[in-house]
Image 1 (cartoon, rainbow, N blue to C red):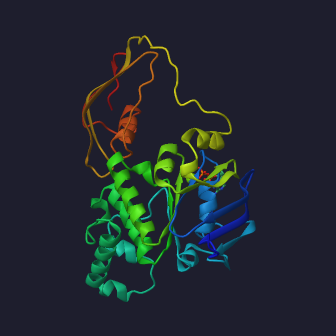
Image 2: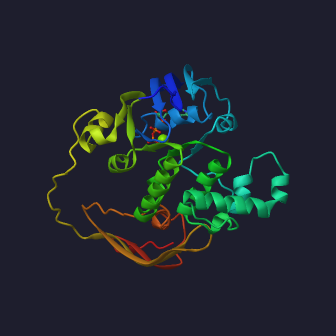
Image 3: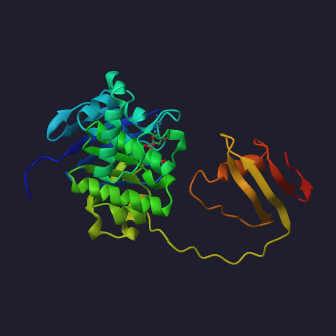
Length: 326
Ligand SMILES: Nc1ncnc2c1ncn2[C@@H]1O[C@H](COP(=O)(O)OP(=O)(O)OP(=O)(O)O)[C@@H](O)[C@H]1O
Ligand SMILES: [Mg+2]
């Protein structure tokens, strides 16, 4: 044990929205060099609490101390000046600009742009240091979602953040990209950064976090639990408020006739690039068909073509045998 104050200590945080107590006297502590998961179901109040820490919202009550010093952030800029930055569920990058331009965006030093080559080198160095590989000159629209996330992380590191808050960062990643992100996060903590990892995925929390704080309906149900001393089942109970069955017992379903069918369906995304390539799929009466995949792989386009919001560029859709394409 030592007496250095925690990197962040939030005490008695209250935040009310109309009809909702989103933070109900919440305490939250982050130590240097740890990955701390903030776990909870939809609407538990995770993003709200962290938006307060990142200067986006003001708490109605409570205090924040950073390295033992009382702090009050009126804007994200003030939070980042104190070394605290957040990567939101939806990225905030300008697609037509380059990686480096996006990283410099909002810094009130226009001459940074003039020294673009120098900043590109700096971005490349940071990427090297933290294992965040991305071409500093690439335009954002050319990047995969995983690469865009790296740009968001680099943006905070460039500003000198030593506390990084990631809000559901794996929601947009495939398994390989998730593993890569986890490696990066471990590398960052090894270099003294502290990380808050917001999630509702138990297995991820258990595998990446050192400690976990669980929230339910605006309240903390377990604070600061070492992940090594808990189980996914215990965490699930704290998160949901009752025992959770991980196995669902289900009878095999006898499918009825085909009601909806996609035949060699093709469509483009908003950028005019192919999103569906000759996709064929049948839905039978009485069954639930799951569509698995990382966001951004055509699911939205399929739903939009099926409901007439987007034109098919090839193939057919039939509903009860009737052609309803376009
Ligand atoms: N800007 C807002 N205005 C009004 N109500 C809000 C606002 N932001 C959040 N809330 C409400 O506060 C509660 C907590 O929401 P919050 O987004 O913090 O939850 P969360 O744990 O991040 O959930 P999720 O997993 O869905 O992201 C919810 O009931 C939500 O509807
Ligand atoms: Mg949230």
